[in-house]
Image 1: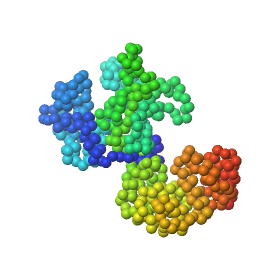
Image 2: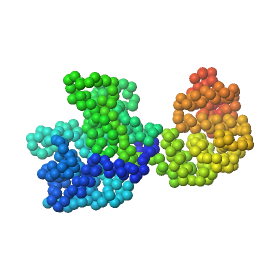
Image 3: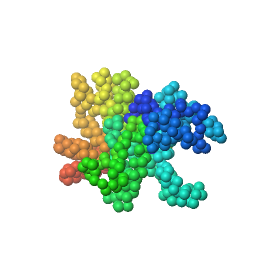
Image 4: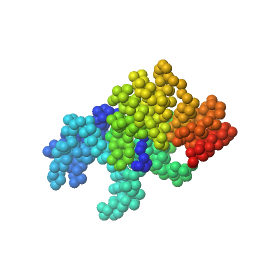
Length: 478
């Protein structure tokens, strides 16, 4: 991802709801319980971790059982330490006390709670980029007990590993905010790994790349298992039979085409909030729906220009909810004027915004009936709202609005199937369209006619469009 261009907007849940989600995540709730349990007799080692003798009691406090109970308790303690819920008072004695941020979980604002959760998330992400501890021990032993860690023997590069996980999470974020709904669909783990490892210009992955994807899936399976308890993702792990390569016959028939067996991951609403916060911290332009609610109409129309339709609709609803309808309509119409390259798309967004405004906006639309840039748009709105005495548009206005609309669609969607259908319809419904269209006094006339020539499937019609584009450029000295 580039940090210079804006990402699609995230549709975030209210902070109060997200804070409740954060408090109920298994890892943060465990960390908070351990922070409240810790007392004068609690002891930590040189790294701040609970001493081995106290891990069983900590696990018991958390109600953890089984062979991983002590390890899970130790992880919860590390999160409590990193998130500021506990702090080391005396490193030599190994004593601890409640941290300053512990009180925020019960007495702080939703934003305070989310700040603590973000600190916990960073701690877990850091742990997720570290290889298996058993491998670390083996690497040290391989050095003859010298205590020196040879990272080369682990085939582990800390920076590269963290960068890879960030890339995977970044792509998961893009897939989530790119969805039309408020939450993205589960993403198959192979597709997510491939999105980072397979070059965009590679038609068919090589065997070497496929092996890299397979290895990455194993690492990601471990990492997402770690990230689920902190509330970042919902995760369906890889089928254990696939990981072990077991030759035993399955107890029940297995669908070999079931992609969910290879792992499925979905970003939670809390996870969406968390990744957006990390992207903003890293310098990315990561907008959220609602960011433009307090800004002017010019910021709304320009800001939503590249938004997906559902996000643009939601952002506009936020903006309109804070304004009186007639004043909002006048402000939108004023911001929609212009002859610059972005003006057609602004007018399209204006038209879409006005469709959400009630009949009380009618006076604002009547005020611009004679405006060369807004008169056609105003007539469409008035007619759709059943207004009386709407003057018919002139032929000049009809053609200008047509060119403006196609220019906006080109800017919004590029060469989409919807635009192709619009182009075909225009050429079919208006005989002699191109003979008149090249004369339209609109900055985008030549570009629109060229696009129509490129998009229309009929070679004869496409040729007419290209000729008309040439005439339009000649007319304007281009």
